Image (cartoon, rainbow, N blue to C red; front, side):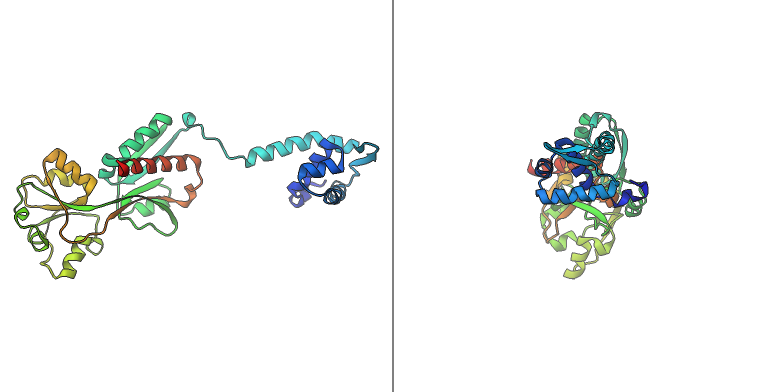
Length: 305
């Protein structure tokens, strides 16, 4: 067979030849390939044309391979085994996986969910090294350029060309000093008479607190402090008249470690959706998928706790 014609050969044709060489009988080869005897006879005709050789001589017992068919037999077995290996999904040996996995995320997610995920991953795959970075305004561009493997964030809107998965929904609550004067008369108007802490990455047009105040005709929102990360807001609240709007998991840490007061917001705020986002180039990568699954499990465990 001319090598220039390799692209024209049907893989099933080679598998049929292999079956004929093993069974040396058209009927038995047909049964092995799950086709009719007439279909296998037609395949044998195609094989003879393709290889320009009779390949088999009929005898009383069935078929006797020609010398050329016998020569093909060993090569064919090797070729089919190689194709089978090529098409078999790679097994994932976690103990031997070595890579660096770069994630941008919120600091509060590291404390509430991701730390557990990283420990679980390191237990099974000790040579996966995480590079954990705080979310930046250019996260999408960095993911697109291959400078990140994943983004895990709250309230993010994924670019349509990225893959994403919802990991959790977090209720937004108010967090403030336990002696804050707003606690005496807790309602929307009171909240807007005191300064707030706002994340510097969040635009006013995307901030639900600012939008509510504008729609309700309340006094213009006062921002007394901006922080790059949400976690840093906890230490800034004690002894101040600031009010923070934070996911419940983070607010609970503020209550536990800083003695702060958690209050439900007196006006409706949408839940914050935590999403994992990655580039489609990693969608079928077995290591990337395994890490994504571990991260998802960690969030599920926290939600069900």
